[in-house]
Length: 107
View 1 (cartoon, rainbow, N blue to C red):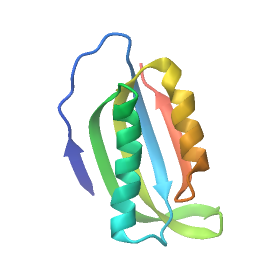
View 2 (view 1 turned 90 degrees about the horizontal axis):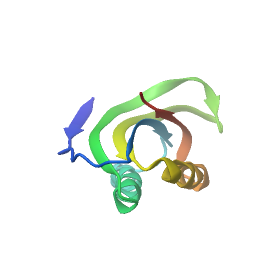
View 3 (view 1 turned 135 degrees about the vertical axis):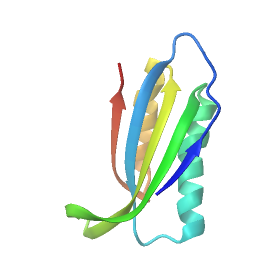
View 4 (view 1 turned 90 degrees about the vertical axis):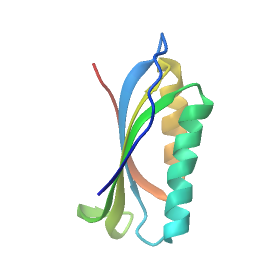
């Protein structure tokens, strides 16, 4: 399990979120990092601040998803404006590399 702490800035009007997403097990390590960076750049580009990224590594799924038995798990904690979460979820659904995600609003 890898964890990266990112400096957190205090911004008004931002809500705390936690995002867990599963990336396809068939992608290369370079593509895995690129996918994680794409999600991080989307959050940062919309005025959000990322406080923590944890890569849990490749794990077995509880049940098959899109014919996959395992996937790369990633947990992200961040702050984002409430209106931007729908656009983030839409982009996660469109992504071919992300097979499942769960976005939670904290607090």
